[in-house]
Image 1 (cartoon, rainbow, N blue to C red):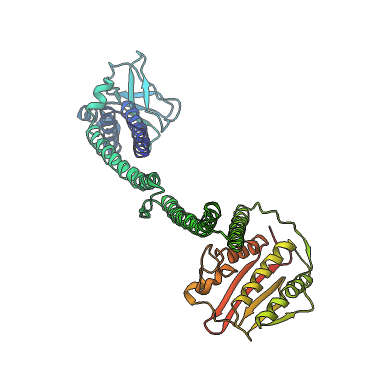
Image 2: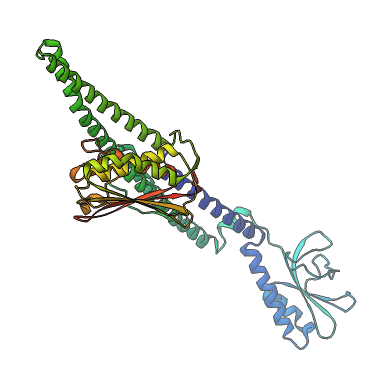
Length: 454
């Protein structure tokens, strides 16, 4: 019955409320037992009689009449405590108390017969002591509580407070628990695509939880979409070479490729397509390791000037054959940075190769490097046709292929080249950005810290 959070919250609030009301009720009952209505009425008569006597010029002469009028016993003592007059001489003898009345206790005194009296004392101007007393009434505790004039309104007020508090506790419990229940219901439907973000409600802490859940839900849905796209893209990339391999292998098996030239061509296509699949597998493995942070980066001091010069030397024949001008501008104060030289060479090789393949004849590819505020900034720019504005935000996505397969880093590739570049730069604690304008070219800027925090 109380297994749900809402029920437990309500029960907790209810127990707190009942406990608080029970403590208040106990204190009130204790007060009524110690000071019931009959006691209070008795003290009202004592005080009234005392005031009436205090107003007399000769209190001693009015003792009997005041005692009879207020149904009390009046005693007058001299300054030494000796009894002067007693309106009820036949009753048990009372003596003047030897100490002052404790204001927190009921003023009571026993006569010589052991009977208990309530009393009130006043010191008169002439030095005498005036005592007004009345026998303590006998009461039944239960009747004292039930018949007290304040019992009924207190009981009614307590019941109303209890009911209102329980209703308020129910509302608060729902206010806290209902948003959490929405989160639970939404979490149970994951990984469905049609899940809508939960509406934020409830207290601040619950709203924070719901905001975090919505953010997580968005990431999960994005991850699911990426995963489906990834599987679809990999399947598509594997389908073409597998179809070629299967077709030409079948041609070799059934004798369709009859001449040596045809068999050689079939074998060559099978070899090239198998190599394409192998490169795709290696690229996927690289991305998986970089994503998981398990890539074997051999961090060591890297002479960035020597590394960039070696990349440029490697592409000079390709640039000459393509009729593209290859320019280099390296600052003289480049510092040695900490990184994996082979991986960084892979980054700049990919960028330069990409730039050369998308730069027309008589165009220019420029490699620049400079030192900037504790990091090395390397840019690779070209004078190609550029990248459409809507494609720039996706240029580092996996399998994304912009106009002319620009994202591949390899025309006809799978679209993983720039994704790998991005992950390698991130693994070095750096960042990469792209600037492009249609008809004016593209530039990739890599920022590498001298001491990466990885």
